[in-house]
Length: 617
Image 1 (cartoon, rainbow, N blue to C red):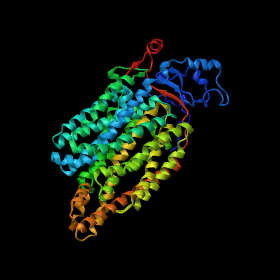
Image 2 (spheres, rainbow, N blue to C red):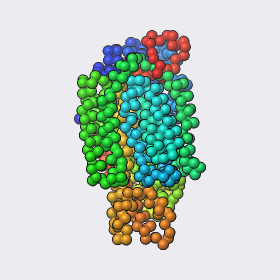
Image 3 (tube, one colour):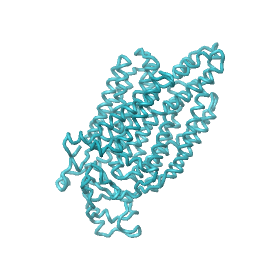
C-alpha cells in the first residue's frame, strides 16, 4: 500500500467529494499571512474562504524564501488582524474545560477498581456481576466514540459535548442511587457512553483549536489530566468506600456542574454552514453506525468475558466472535461505497486508511492501549499477591502513571519545537519492550527499588508514545480528515484497552491453571481458581498459616501467570517497534490550519464586520 498521505497539507489535498462545502473550496484571496516565511514563530490567521476557516500554522510555508522576511506593510497588516481571531480567554477557557472533563472521566474509570468487592457485598452481587461493572463501562466507552465524533461534525461540537456530559451525569446519578446490580450496571453503561463521547470530542475539539505542529503540547496537557485522574481514582476510591460507596459516583457531580457552566461560555464555535435538521439527519451514516456498533459489541463482549463466564470453546463465545468479525468486514465494505449508494458521509472516512504511516500508527496505538490496560489491571494484582492492601497496590502503579504524564507533556513540547515525531516514536517503542522485558525478573521477593526502576522505564516509554504516536496518524491525514483521524486515534487506544482485558485474562488464566495443576493436592481446583483471580487474592490474605502449602501454590501460580503476561506484552511491544521502524514515514507538520468549527472570540464590533453569516453551535 502506498504511503500517499499529505506531506505539506496544501489546499490541494482536500478532496472534491467531501460533503462539507464541496463547491466552496476556492483559492484563498491574498492575506498578509500568505507571505510569512516558515521560520516565523507566529500564529497567523489567514483568509476565511468557503466553509472552512483557514489559519496559517506557526511554521506555515509562505511565498517568500526562508531567508527573507515580511515587509513593514505586511507586518502592519498582520498586526491589524481582528482580535476575534487571536488567542484570548475563550481559547484558554476552552482548553481548560477539555482538561476538566478529561479529568472527570479518567477519575471515574479507575475510582471503582478497589471498591468492587465492597460494592458487590453490599448489594448482593456475584463476582462475575461485579466484573461487569467495569467491563460494561469499557465496552460502552469504546463503541460510542466514532458515532459521536461523526455526529459532532454534522450537529456541532458543543451540542455533542453537552449531550455526552448529560449522559455521563445521568449515569453517575443512576449508579449512586443503585440498590441492586441491574441498576448499577445500567448506570455504569451510561457513564461509559458519556465517557466515550467526551474522550472522542476532547481530541476532535483540540484539532479545531490549534495547528498540527502545536498540537503535541496541548495533547500533552490533556494526557496530564488523564494521568492525574487515573492516579487519584484508586486512592480516592479506597478512601470513599470506607465512608459510603455511592460517593464514588456523587463525587462526579460538582465537576460536571462546573463543566455545564464552562462549555456554553468558552466553546462558542463558529460554523460556516448550516442546514435544516432533516438534512443533518440524512447526512449521518445510520446504516454504518448500526453495523459498526452491533459488530464491535458482538466482538468485544465474548472477548472480554471468554474464560470467565463461558469457556473459549463454548458456542456462546465463538458464535458472537465470528459474527462480530464478519460484521466488521461488512462495515469496511459499507464505508467504501457509502457515498455512492447511501448519499451520506461514512461513519469512518476510507481516506483515513490509505496511508501506511497512518495504518501503522493505528496498529501501534492498539498495542499501546493493550499494554497500558494490562499494566493498570495486573500490576496492582501483583502487589496484592505480595501482601499489599488495595490502596498500597494502587500507589505502586504510580511509577508508571506518574511518569506517563510529564513524559507526554515534554515530548509534545519537543515535537512542537523540532517539527519531527519519528525519533520519539522509535524511542518510546524501544523503552516499552525493555521495561516489559525487565518485568520478567519480578517475583514475590523483588526489592522495592528494583520494581520502581523497572516501572519507570516502561512508564517513560508509554508516556512518550502518548504524544508522539498521535502525530503519525494526523500528519498522514488531509486537513479535512484531521478531526476524524484524531478521534479514530482515541478509539484505537480504547479498543486496545478492551482487547487488553482479553489478552491479559486469557494469558494469565492459562498459565495460572497450568501451575496449579502441577500440585496434586489442588489440581482439581485449578480451573475454578483461574476464573476468579481477584477474589482469590482476598482468600489468600485471610488464609491461616496452617494452609501455607495452598498459599505457596497460589502465589507461584500468580507469579508465573503474571510473568507470562509480561512476556506477551514484551512481544507485542517488539512487534510495534518493528512496524514503527519500517512503516512510519516522515510527514511535515507545517501546514495551513483549516477547520469548519473555529472558536468564536469576536466581540460586538468584530461581529458586525464579518462578511459571511455564521452559526454559533
